[in-house]
Image: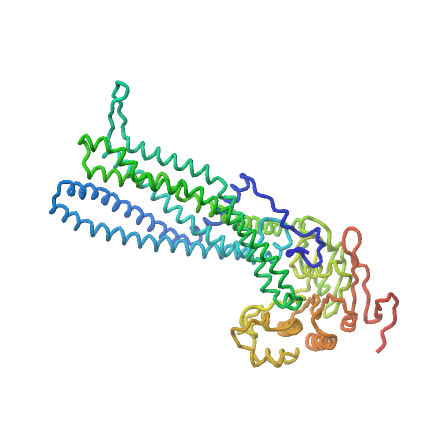
Length: 618
């Protein structure tokens, strides 16, 4: 069964990795637009701080450019003094350089603070925004049950979101700096270089602003070469990020299921699976390496040649005496800055590709969450939930489907009185767990109504209890904060469920209780939570499967004694559970979905699995 399939879902219904299709250029554009639709919200929800930091950064960029222009002018003064062997002027220029350099360094440090603060706060806001949508209305669970490009959401939120919020700030700073620098230093180049006049085929040719044209032409050649050579960078980066996420997921699965793997002796098989997953990672990194190698040819060649080009262009004017050495060095410095500004895309294309891949993955997750949210608002294809005065719980013509409409449970009609104990039975795959998850609100797809008594408080005990990180005290009261529950009540409850020997370790930190406790101990702890929370409706989904018969009887009697008014809905296979329930609902798989085929009154009749019936005695 696929990792993301539901226990009651046939394999053919589960979303599969093979269903992923590479998005078209149009869908990629829509993904980027979807990312920005959420990302720009930071400047709206935190307007005062966000805009103050943004404007401060722009001012610092402008100030740095102004100092850069003065330093460029300083190059002329310094090298002219050097050419004239003027020691006094050289000393004066040296003294001027010190405050200019100090100013440049100070503004550079301040720019780093403003830039990284924007990145940090933006990421914090986006992280909260995505988590709010992911955790709302059980969507983090429902994503495992629907098709879409949202695999490994934890990696997308942790890593892709970091890249997606870090890079745009750097790009914005770099692009603004490039535009301002190009605008300012083009004027410098035009002023210094003027026109270049030379004879050609008996004519006199004049090229106005030849240094500016040279810088623009040089940058265009590099940019076009980078775009052509690195055209697959975005696709390769997306594939690399996906395989990294899948490898991390496989490692996480091994850690979470370490006990089962160890008991089965599955280390060799797990290692083979890890090796296959890691081989895919290495393959994508190899592809990325080749892309970097190609783009490095362009960027490295450009950085080596750029210093020689302006000198060669200005050499004729220097040789004929119309340009001084200082003017040549000033032109060279300005040319490099202009070329760098125009060639900004050459230097940033690999990182831009990596950002695009991360933005696509975050947007894909948001699109899937959008789809769930839209369906919640319209109610289309969803089971409605309401209140009834007539029962503790009523299912009115409830059909449960997959998100694509495929039927799982069909046409269920049940009315359950307050305090009534119901046992749901049936062969594996008949939709029992799916039905109780629909009752709990985890599985919304289908039709019909699920109605609860006024002020109902529902609590679900799954087959595999969740043990949060932290103390045993926190695990016992989860999801209620431990400090809100009286410690004496916690101790009494642990004693009652047979975990009294752990009471002294109640506040012990640094223990991985998820691994320290056995399956039976975890289910006992789950019953302790039930007794602490005292819900009006409790759903037990194979909640005693890890307990022996004696322990199962102890837990069920404890529930009956301490929670006599709680309505109980249990899913189980063991016949012994019938003794603790009032009614038994039998489900069978039929064409078109699973159906409720019998509703048996256990207070009068006790079903026997062989198919005949006897009246309960005693």
